[in-house]
Amino acid sequence: MRTVTTLLAASAIALAAVPAQAQTSTRDRIGQILGQLLGRPVEAGAAASVDAQWAAGQTPLATDRVQFETQVDTAVRERRITQATGTRLKADYLALVQLEARYGADRRFNTTERADLVQRYNALAAVVAAGRYADEAVATPVVADGQAEFNRRVDAQVSARRLSRTQGSRLKTDYTALVRVEAGYLADGVITDAEREDLDTRLDALDVRVGDVAYTPAPQTPQQRLDAIESALRNLPVTAQAQAQIRTEHGDLSRLAAAYARLTTTAEERAYLDARLTDLETRARVRR
Image (tube, rainbow, N blue to C red; front, top):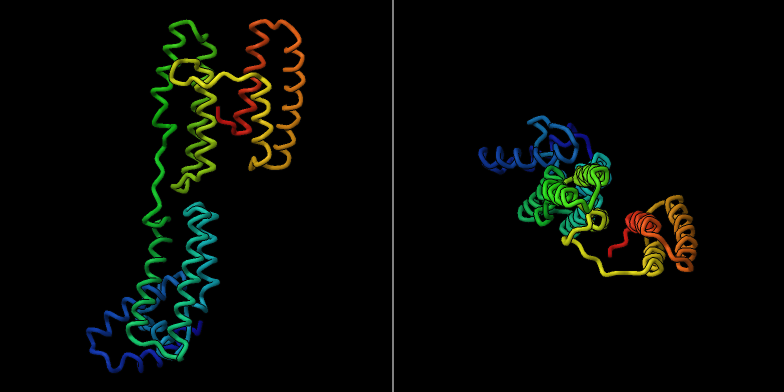
């Protein structure tokens, strides 16, 4: 983009035939878009520089596309907007640049075209400021909101002696840890489908451990559960190291389950295998 100083003369020519009151309104509006493009406040005398470029047949939005995308990338890194919102913003800005190119194909922009470009750019700038599009739902803390009810269920199981006090305490601690995981996911104001699935899987695993009627998964043999874990691993979005660790534990549990199948196991042994399988299901994001 030209410097603001070099555009002042062209700006004055472009606005010379406009009434003084209209000039002030136009300068204010274009001053907003210029400030957003440059990422800093602009002087009042430079307010019409973008409009002047259009009047001169130039394409300032195309010129500043890289700068706009850099600002979006910064917002994503700082978790002010999600990656999905950032991608959508870049696509919408590209569409705006293409519209600018069509309007300027004859090397001039009429008043209607300039006003349309300003309106569309301001809409994108508003998305950056708000952190999301208007049609993006604001996520609510489902896990945190359910903590009191979860604790009540645990206390009921402890009172009925279906859980020990140690088990109840551990369940509450693990639920609190999940609340922190959810808070981390909510830092940008949006929970992705993958994040919601992860939370649901972990909640299901906690429900299994509570053992009340609020969650009654269909009975499965250890081998069926191992098969489900193996299937989930094919598309599990984790690092190669985490994938290898889960597969190693999956192999260990497969051998243990096979050994138990040949024996008459005790309740303690069955509980141990169930706990190990539940932990692996959680990490593999298997929903039962």
